[in-house]
Length: 251
Image: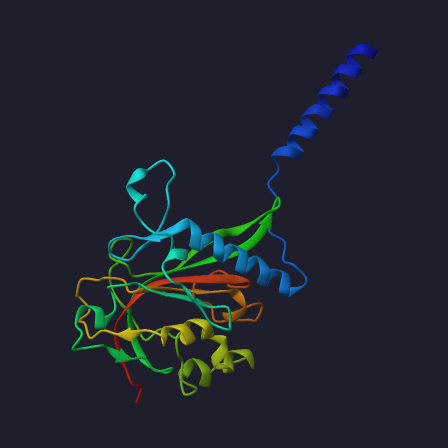
């Protein structure tokens, strides 16, 4: 009996140790927001190194088992620009209005413009799991790209601009919801103005012109925000892949 007991004890310890080895650490929000900011920056760099733009400007991940993507440059090799806010944007060479028609360099995008966007937008949670810092928990915010979704451009999104006279703000029931920052992703607004808009009809073929990556500190960080998607944007980084079909002054 004593030997049987020792075998059972040894076996239970073995399975217990195996279980601990197999457990996957889950995200825990850092108390210090500067730590989250560091996670964001490290994860953004890995994203830039691990993805490329295909022939129509869509973000794609490199596949080590597929040689067809070997000729593409990393996003980090496409001259990404970093703003003081931490936002990174990439203008795709050959896909800007002036590249296509030098006589029509495109429309300047104002900070309160009415925009029409062909766009894919995803959010990620940057986390350090088992000593590895990278993006996890990918979620789709909007998908208007014909290759991945409906193909219908997004008109005048409130995360780019919302007027103080908008009914959502005028009829808001909380102090937070009465603020433009409750709706707007400020880093996206800031970076989109670095681009020029086309003048295209909604049914025109798309050729995505760039990428904007907004770390959580330039988005909603840990503040309350409008429910755009049914899940929280707390601590989330945003990746926008888009073409500006139109930009018109707001009257």
